[in-house]
Length: 165
Image 1 (tube, rainbow, N blue to C red):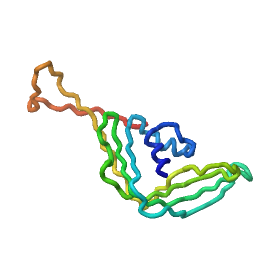
Image 2: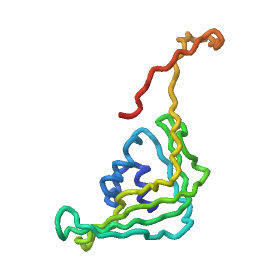
Image 3: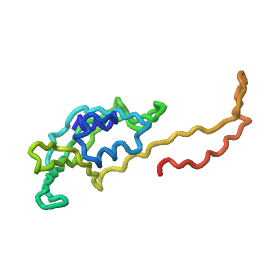
Image 4: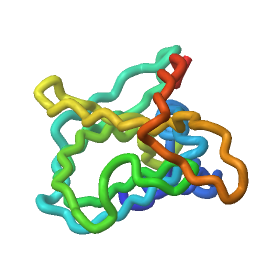
């Protein structure tokens, strides 16, 4: 699992075969101009299979095996914006993370590999902290050598910005 999640941090196509299409889209969406620093510290419990199924896909005999694995580990994650400012998390402070990962394998292919298909977020899981967005508020144009006197200047209201479509 360490290797799988580190693929999402680098956005390189090396080793991408261990992921299904859906997780790749989820990891890359909204992270193009961000830097993610992720580190697996330790496993708090051994991984445990909590659910397994073997559905037919599209046609009879096209079998896929899907396994849901409960993983309880300690990790660090820091997300930086394109200017290198910390947006979320910390590289020094590890957090306990409980994840339910769905792995899949095409069972008809004897040489098939187990791939990450998705991640299940339980309804009882705590809500993620919102990321604080920073914007630049335009100030007065200053000439070289001129000092800014904040007492005589009224800050204009920023325009509405659409962050995501």
